[in-house]
Amino acid sequence: MEPIEVDVVRGMKAIEALKVDLLKAQWQLQNGALSGSDAEMLEALADLVGLSYLMTRRLGFDFARLDRMLLQRLESWRTDDKVDLENHWGDLSLLLSYLAPDE
Image: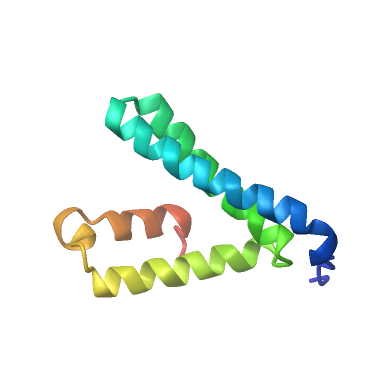
């Protein structure tokens, strides 16, 4: 795989804008939850995922590296299961099987 060259100094404005947009999406998720708006919550969640990928690229990482880290984190969360998402509902296993069905 070809390394990605990133000029962080030149891209700092984009990185800062992405950070602001991530905060806005978090606020939108909270606002959607408070108002009971499914559409607003889903839009905010989609924004958080998409912005995370864009931030990954601006910071000089490739998308596959974020995917690998995400799978590692989900496995770790499933093992720890601190908030009982796995124990009560199987959410982590379901998400892992969705994201990596052949593994």
